[in-house]
Amino acid sequence: MSQYLKLGMIAIGLLMNVVTASAHNSINNDQESYGKENSHQESYDKDSGNKDSSKQLKKYYVKFSTHCKGDVFSKLKAKEIDVLSELIHDNVFIVKMRSEQVNNVAGEPCVNYIEPVPKREMHEDANPFQP
Image 1 (cartoon, rainbow, N blue to C red):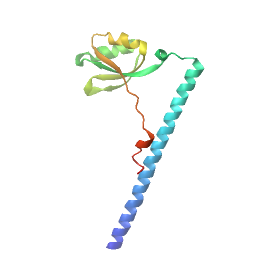
Image 2 (cartoon, rainbow, N blue to C red):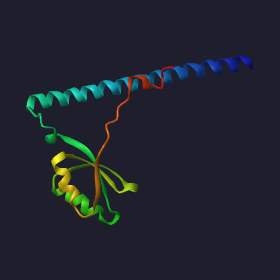
Image 3 (cartoon, rainbow, N blue to C red):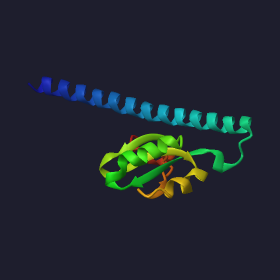
Image 4 (cartoon, one colour):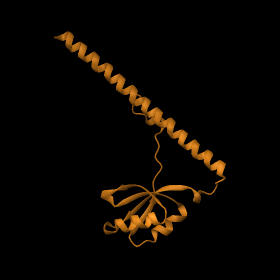
């Protein structure tokens, strides 16, 4: 019986190492692809000569009144603003638009407020898989 217990513990230990290693590789791959996305955007900006930050598309939270969801959505589409996602329980659209469009959208009667989506990144020292 103790031999089976030892074999089971060894198997569990090996599986934990495999899971941890694959998760660590996944995080590294995500970080590498994030860097590639950023370098692609930088090269696009350099090639197009786009130095003005107001011309770049940025993500924003658009908070709206409960009863105005369809109205706000149709007005965003009419202004050619991409709706990326929706926080259903919070009555918020996540949109991609230029900074000069913010005041135009904020002037809508059903829009409560607009705020930029904060930039999130994983710092080098914040890796949970390294002791």
